Length: 414
Image 1 (cartoon, rainbow, N blue to C red):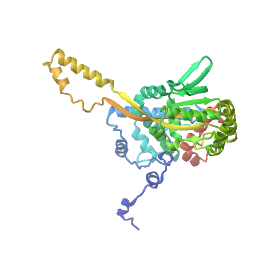
Image 2: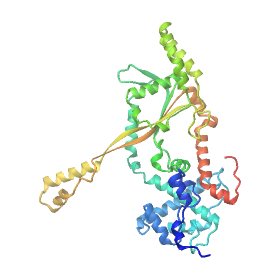
Image 3: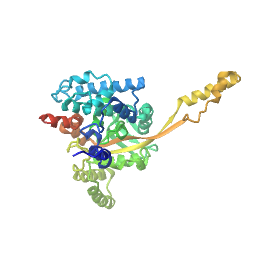
Image 4: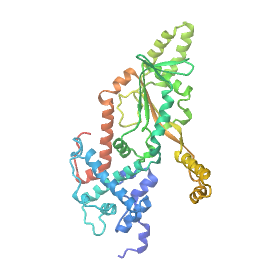
């Protein structure tokens, strides 16, 4: 029976629907979400993506990303670069690719491309890594990173003091001082770490990374962790209005239980005329009874990890140096030779499109923990190395899942 031609208008790509309407990530798709039969099809797709391969510069940039993706896969996901990686080799066909449009055609075995199912799945893996790299490179805020970092850290450094061996935070009128064991800043994730993190995140876009910049406080006691949070918002170092609620997590103290015991303690301190030292000891005893290990919203964080995390956003102020320099140049030209043709050209330029100041919010992460918890966090399964290893394995399994299933490949323990 002949197939009605109108049915061509009712072909649906169900994976695309899952992404558009079902909350599935494109990284979890089995194919590359489009069907390419000719190079022209591939070029149209890339143009919609934002790259015109007819432009030599854009073509070279895209091909450079392809080469970086190959090297990244070999270094982090395959045994040749990582002893715990997959015992697989990138098929030779990809070393003969000279144009990224060829890579797209390989994904579904387009006309003229006799490829195996395995090669098609490899093409999808490479394209997904390329997509991640491109998102990282095109985060416009990256060019302002030094300014961002300076403005965020300066808010904290103003209140951090050291006298001999003693490290502490103190407010401007010196009415509150909280001793610290450590204060650390995380100035920037490495490029490789960022790519791995993006590959295992559902969102898979650079704008959704919240921990490129971060600070960590280690206090002597759990109660001082709470006092420190109080200190940060009372001195407007952080703005509670700018906290991202979905990113807050607490595995240090059961605040509900602590609050229930804290009010009676306050009354007892008045009734018994406790000294500050006695009150601190009683409050810490209460905090230790309210240990919390249940709440965890990051699958790569060990159950033994104890800390308070939250993500804040700071309004960054960037003064465009070009605007000031250009204004000076126009002023100089006008004073030196107002009738010169160059002066007239300079004065006729519309500066309305040149931003004098740029203001935008940028997220950063704050971690607060006590000394005992910090020691536990940095050993065994709770350590940062284990955390990074878990992330890498998660990204690897996620990216290679269709190929692993196709090859019936047996994974070792991850």
